[in-house]
Length: 143
Picture 1: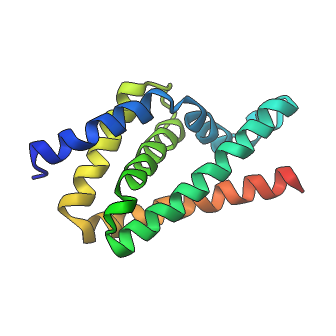
Picture 2 (picture 1 turned 30 degrees about the vertical axis):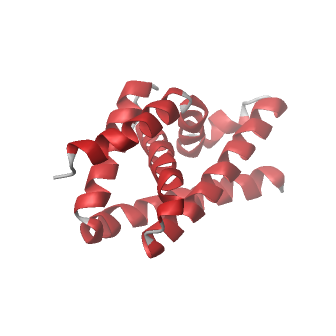
């Protein structure tokens, strides 16, 4: 069980990130429905591409954190979990809710902290697939 103080220590990061996660949620909608992305105006497409690039950069940090357990990468790894939670929420067809994003990201954090090997086996392939989809979306949009 993740200790109360450890979870409390990340609750500020997850709450702050969840409250501003709506663009990440929209990226998840775009990944689910390419037509939705195609119908965005040029400015919104540019924003989704920037959000996608930020997601990919944060996934790189998250992967390094999983490999090294570097305390310097911890907070950014938690921020990535918030992003992953927002995308997952969208891909599951749920409306955006920062509270639900926070709850899911805290669950992901607890799972990662308690059962690292199980977390890695269950979630890493999902994160890798989403990252691959984001890369593909960006490549097709940019041409």
